[in-house]
Image (cartoon, rainbow, N blue to C red):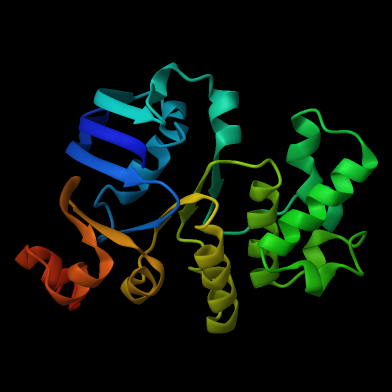
Length: 248
């Protein structure tokens, strides 16, 4: 099964050609790790999938992206953002309680029944591997949580609206190894229910969690393959050089 079908994708921001003739499929219920040096196009690729790039007034696109067989650009943005959730590099909890942070999106989409909200918050926190740590303090400010807990709270907030896809933009860049391991553990379990695309600057993380890995360089998709093949027998010498730390 394919979640995203991408053909001949070019993205410009003004005169900057950020993505160049990208052709790939993103499979369902699996983790795609996206790696590459800075300015390689990997974050632009990620933000194309939920149309955050539309917010740039200089954005221009050629080519085709289909989401579940539907033209991505024809989908209402609000509908798309419910179906495709994003978790950013820095955790961004709202100035609300832990409970209200997770319930926020549910309320925005019309849920107001207290039991429905409570059940949804609990389920999302469990999926984000955070429930046991916060179940007795749901009324406390989210800002009292550690950085790693705040990131898992943001994951729970995304999960609460029941998306089909979760996009992770370097979600562990500011976290310690223990918190990173918890986020990775959550991702590995979540792929059984969600399609996951993970942009990461940590090639070891890509190797640990990715089912497939895509390597971008200078806006081009250089190589896409099963993760074990990318990391043991890449077809392109540029992929091998990046993985070995020769540049980037």
